[in-house]
Length: 220
Image (cartoon, one colour):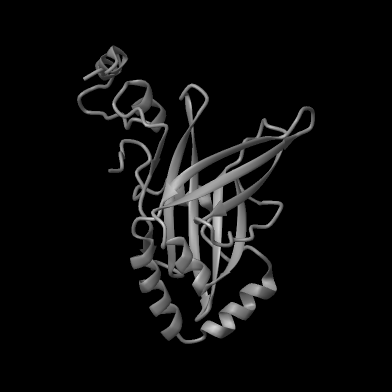
């Protein structure tokens, strides 16, 4: 199966009454799952404020580390939504990045030029109309582009793709909740007045939660 013997060596160090949850880096290094990127579908969560969430992890360099990423889609009114993209911040990198998302030939979401810092994460947000959201799930994959500028040297550009599986169903559920919930207009106005970042659970808590399972979890 191509599994690295290092996994066997690790197993020998774990006592029978204990356990060791494999990290994504270990899963990659041991040859269990060598995909450079893993991702979940788009799913609705209603624990606090209703939101659509998608998680992904992307290999950095030789696979010794993976960067966690998340997309959140909020419904702020019947015809208005807010898309947020969060990812782990590279503390040692003196880089200024801009993010773009495209869905085929349609107009891309207009993310802010500079991200906000949320603990160990940086976040970009974009306000979208309902029709612009529908354009996202009209295609099977979305393209995410990054332009990074460093203090010394030329800027670099990179791109990757994410799947839209589950987004249409999730949006229908979220839009129905947004349209019927009391006080939607007031919350939307308050959100717009408070700035680009809605009140959310800190990303570190989201990624630490067991539900996404970024250790031994291997998405289909």
